[in-house]
Image 1 (cartoon, rainbow, N blue to C red):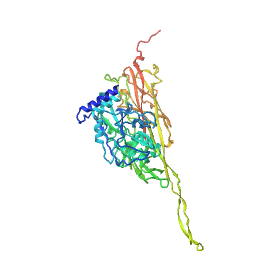
Image 2: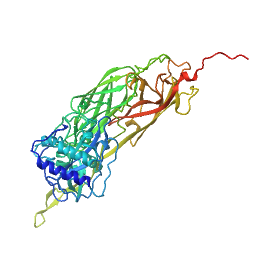
Image 3: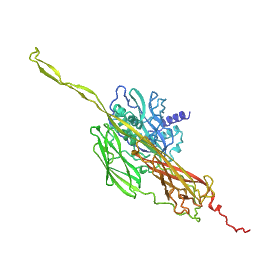
Image 4: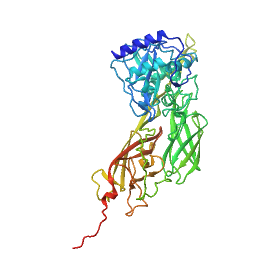
Amino acid sequence: MKRIIAFLLCVTLAASISSKAFADGDGNMDGGGGGMGGGTGSNIWHNGEEGVRVTVVRSKDNKPVSVPLDLTNKNEGNIQKHFGKVSKLHYSGGKVLTLSSSKYTYENPGKALPKIISNGGNSNIKDIKSYFTDRLVIQYIATTTGASYDTLINGNYKLLIEPMAYFTFMGTKYAMTATEAAAYDQMASGGLRSKMVSLTHQNLPLSIFLEKSDLGYPAYSGSTTRPQSDSTIISSLGLGIVKFKDDGSDDNDNGSGGGTGSGSSSAEYRVDTDVVTSVTLSTGSAITPDSPASVTFHIGGGSYSVTNIVIPEGESQLVWVKWHTPSTPQTVNISVSSSKGSLSANSITAKVVSLNENPPPNPTAKDRNNSFTIPSIPSKIQTTASSWGIWHATWIPNWIWNENWVWEEHTDWQSGGEWVDHGSWVDAGDWEYSFTSYHATLSANMNLSPDDKDPTANGKQMRSGYGVKINVSSSIRSSAPSSHIAAAQTAVTYFPEFAYNAYWRLLTLTADGDSSSFDFKTNMYSTYNRKVHFTPVWFPDGKYTAYTYLEDAWTPAGMLSMNLSDYTTIYGSVFDDWHVGPKLVD
């Protein structure tokens, strides 16, 4: 009933106002396109069968907080296959593409959507941006997703907008976002691209993309007039963002390295760490096993070559090298060259930094902080899953008879001779490409507890002034060979008494491999050389929560990272365990 009322209200308001939009948001989106081409037979797209998927995203950690909402002007009740309500952020976080035959649900908004998928190179991005920054539209989205309008626009949330297409492929009617179409094409080893390239790999993904980087996705600066590869679509296309507060998101860089765009890029790594540096190799014509491509990385005076790369026409693939960073902070200039195709970057400036430079000062019994208030626990941008893949090619023979008719004379024949076919069988086959997908997932746990030397600790309860110990355990699970990945190698812990900012402790890696563990380094101020952090004696009763950022779990698709936290409960202080009085004598 609420949804019906909201729908009728939106219709009424839309009819009663002038054509001038009341813009409440800032649209971060751009667009391109090209000739649509034509589908025939069992592979058809009709102009106007389009829509958008809208997801509410929490700004502070880029997490989806609403069930994605599909909007379209059409009646799409005849959809036979779809992939559920899953956003691009969900897929980036490790959600697996899963085909569904369940009833497809959607909404027809009161104010009709503008044209989403354009052709002929004419982008409709101005109207799309105006629509999704219109107050009435935002009010409708808020109501339909179960949020209040004031909450949605208070600066804590963003809208993720993804273009969608409804089309028939191999006789079946599908609903797909641009990201889903690219991922499905990888599953089908290029089968979707071969039938619907103008729609699924050009006009749909190029209908909306970012002007400025946000949500961990880059601003797109590539071609807007030709079909794009699956990997480019998944990484960079088919999304727009509406935000309601300038949060500087276009400057957000989580230091995960790599980067798209031609020419050069930058990366940040930690000292003495296994990392994976990757670039994207794209090609307009097929690269076959007969003449494969190679990519060479030049790092620190050494060269690392990746050979036997094959890629189908119009596609791309990540190419990477796993290497170990220097033990001291410095800048490493990486150059990359390829024998075929084009690279996303020919040079990478890698800044290698040390995090072991700002440990907390020595706590004392006289320390005070009467104005202290409990700070909010941070939540940095985290990536707990990634996916990538490699193209392979298999020769599919197609033997045909190549005729070669020759006249052979026979003087004793009445005809004088005969035509004889001296032809031969010729293999007119071709290379068939398949894509092997890999994925990796990072999981971790953190345990903060009183030091074993604390005489009055009880479980997780302790008095302030004593030390706490920590254990962080992490695991990376992957379908790829170990040469593709590196497990988590860095964990940095921050503390509430410093507002999780001024000082930190770089944890020691105590076990590595697919499963890694971390704890505190030996505290130089500990009488017993304990691996602890001392809580301040003035800390108020209640939860004492430490925050750890786990990082440097590397894959070809970037770095995996994770936010962790745990607490002990403070009750009283170390002074409560002291008694000063006269010595009793018998």
